[in-house]
Image 1 (cartoon, rainbow, N blue to C red):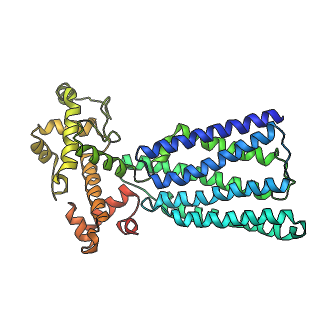
Image 2 (cartoon, helix red, strand yellow; image 1 turned 180 degrees about the vertical axis):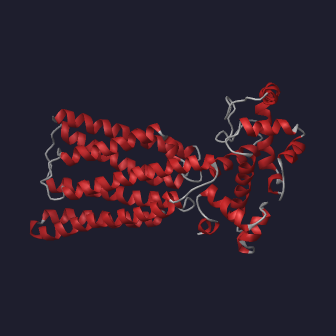
Length: 388
């Protein structure tokens, strides 16, 4: 039984460390870094704790039960705070909150040091219990705050753009899952709060199983690490590469080069396929170049014919590319490029001397309403929320 428990703990910790390295690698790929900082810390703390449980089990090390409780509370506190800041950064990807995060962690660290001091002096056992309950109460408050954040700022978000909607759905499912995991772990800890802390118990098995499931999902479905602004991050990478004159297709999340987004059926489309397919990559590179190296897409009224004229290509060829090899429509593609331009303007203090209505017209929208809707559809937040 002990050997089985040890294997379970080591398996979970191994998957946890693997998840942590995946998150670290994703940061290098220009993912939302501030989001993954907190998720990485959360996963790392859980992994270290599970690895420690495995050591305690396999080698049957005997430690003072109260000290084990303190260590457990310390790692649980880091995980709880990291979970809150993970959701905060997922919603407000521009902000890191790292100073606030360290301040709260320091206060939990002081509480755990105080717990250890009180544990040495048995006369203060009543105070030990009060502080232990305070830490658990803080975790409950954190859970309530997490539910508030995810309900109003994540689960209610929607988009009319299919590609963005798909990413939103991934994030929603992931946040529902991680919130349920967090709730179950906290519930298990509260239910077993007064048990005489033997390392191997029903709570240890249950919590390990929950973490193992979460780790496996991270390893298999890495889209959860992109965050809501993944299109913006990809576009920023494209712009940087365009400046370096890289002649390659860069918006791989939007284009489908190897296959088609839908079947070619009509004779006209079949004849176009034979002409366009050999030049498909070249066409897409030209579309991306004009998107990020010029202000063509921020003109008020541009059509696919205008784009074809600008690229000196037949309009039917451009129409074929967007119909069969783009995961977004031409109209949606225009919105994505324009909103990216708007974000750049907001980041360079355009709003300091102008209004959001002026910005809407500046980047090619015909009204503030259409700008507001597109901004929220693509970024997951309103222009006002983005500025906060």
